[in-house]
Image (tube, rainbow, N blue to C red; front, side, top):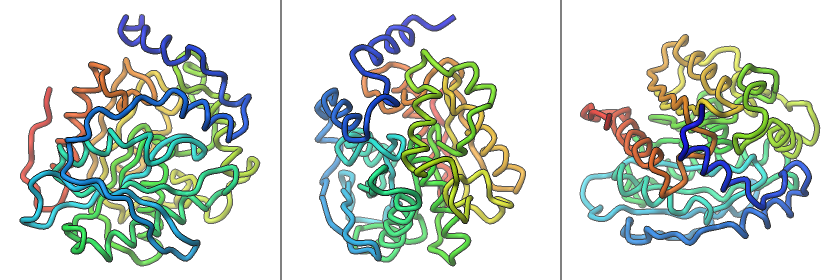
Amino acid sequence: MLDMEVSGLLQVLDQGFPPVHLMTGAQARAAVAARRVPVDNLDDVQAAEDRVIDTEDGPLRVRIYHPHGDGGEPLPVIVFFHGGGFVLCDLESHDGFCRRMSKHTRAVVVSVDYRLAPEHRAPAAARDAYAAVRWAARHAAELGGDPNRIVTAGDSAGGNLAAVVCLMARDLGGPPIAAQVLVYPVIEPSFDSDSYRRYATGYFNTRDAMRWYWRQYLGGDTVPEPAHHVAPLRAADHAGLPPAVVVTAGLDPLCDEGRDYAAALARCGVPLVHRHYPGLFHGFLTIAAFGPAVCARDILWADITSILPGATPRKAPA
């Protein structure tokens, strides 16, 4: 039986929002933007600066967050990729989440406005993500950051990009990545897992929506090669990847693939923290005022700071 707070929030999230798989990419973006809530935590960071960086594929927008009181020792640099099924969302949609992350992890956060599908198919988003991480590594000192503590992080489709960039960095010779943070990540375009069957409808994210997202990104049902630079579970092995924090939600079609990816990392000896929230749903962590999300975010901040090189282990809130 669903917790009453969770059940009520799921009803609110579904109200007045057409099924995403019945819209075009532009229509879906407009529908999401119309429901956007103004950010209420502008003072969480010392500065938030928009920049345009140069990449092989053209200019790329990023937003750089600096926590209060920086200017002393070099800080970790978290390169963050927003969720939205490779189709939706932008720097604004995750602005509040990035501000909280910068504040509570005492890190420079670089949020990346990667190219969206269907206008830009795979591997465009992954190429942008990798270019942003390479840029952050080269410019870490300029940002007040430590090039030895570069972290990739993302939620949902952004979690896919955070995982894929680590595989690309391993395969293509760097840059070194200290940790990866995958929040209910999109891992594999297969839709027959137990969690896909159990939670196909009624829990905010749906199986039909995920099929639509993947088709927008892939342009069909074929994953381009190298497949593991799009669907990270398809890597021949996962050895040599950075330590990981993986968050999964029980009431989520993506739950099993996130769990399976965590297991694949663990089998290859990758240091791992896997946090599973059985009574919660896809997307819960970025809902600012949702009670269970507040506690889960505190745990996530503690996990991120604890998994970095040289960190003093810190007990996460119960």
